[in-house]
Image (cartoon, rainbow, N blue to C red; front, side, top):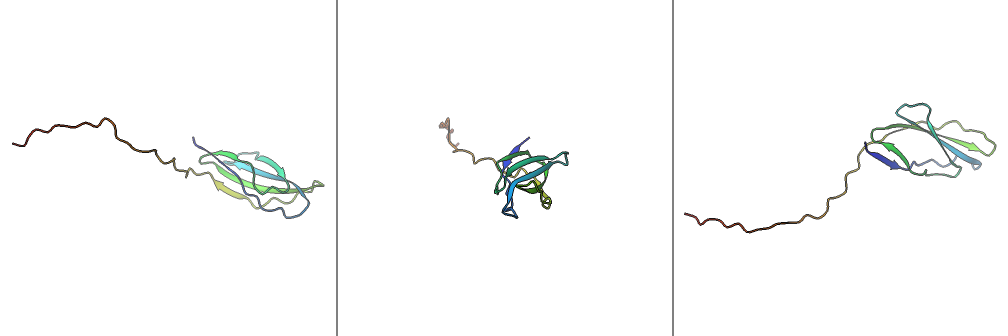
Length: 106
């Protein structure tokens, strides 16, 4: 099965005192979700890896320095689709060229 790595774009924090961000990712309806924690100013995650045909649902919660948690963001759904073409083939060539003698026409 093909796997794909990509980074997830996070919206800017809604307040200046956001200390951490929790990204919850549910894969194929599984429970519990995977939770990744990032510093408050993070706008782009590290690479995450999923299988082709995985169905993802993600939400984000911002947490301030006193531990107050925001409501989760609206759920974002994403289907991991294998739409990456293989690399371009290398250079073509010719090998074992030979002359073929043809009989004279009658």
